[in-house]
Length: 297
Ligand code: ADP
Image (cartoon, protein in one colour):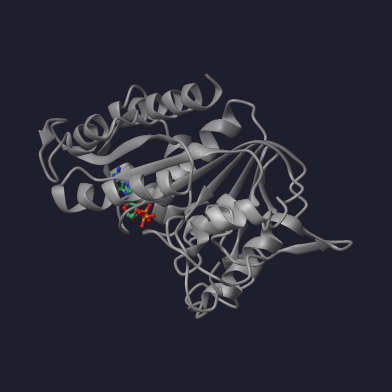
């Protein structure tokens, strides 16, 4: 196994280093054969869902927030873990960016958004929202371990994990350390330049040995706020097409909606801003229901 300071080892690569502490240990054939896996975190959670994207700006955090809220609104106990450490936008999207962690005994108390939704983000320990996090991989690994082991998560039905865009260490580490990881959702926009990266995300999830729960096509067409007609801004159908080609579930499409952008900027999730029979709201709801079906059967 690789020294985690220098290299992340994917399963098919050969390596002669120590397994303990290596972020690739869960996926590395050698670690499996030597029993070198670090223990899973001792958290009471039924389903852990990872949310990934091939590139930034496609709406991954927006989906994570709305998914977590939708699940909490369905009566589930939900933890939202923001592992997009270099761009931790979840607190801003939930209007809780001024919150800081509290300690309860020797445990970190997550920030409680509602009685059933708790959030953990590196943003809660940074001095201010514009402070950049400049950490090497191993420091992020330690932080992730602490976010699992040292947080008073309580008993959760779902943990939704918002990962950074791309195929980095954070996904390897959470796949290794979190119990009951049910799989990953890949968020993409419809254009070819985005779906190309989404394909990589799907392959990455498969290399981690996790099920791909499905692809979500975000920013799929745009509804004109004036006439309600459809504008083909980023196109439509790209996410559905690659889901078909790769043989993974398609969870649905969400259009571009100004209300969705406002929701992120104003810190009040879209899912709480339901306006009558808005087609965007219905699409978010439908995506969430497909995902719950994929996870719970
Ligand atoms: P990522 O996590 O992939 O970087 P974000 O969730 O931060 O992307 O979204 C990027 C921006 O796009 C945010 O301002 C967000 O509010 C906005 N956004 C996301 N999805 C939509 C949508 N369907 N319609 C309009 N704006 C959206």
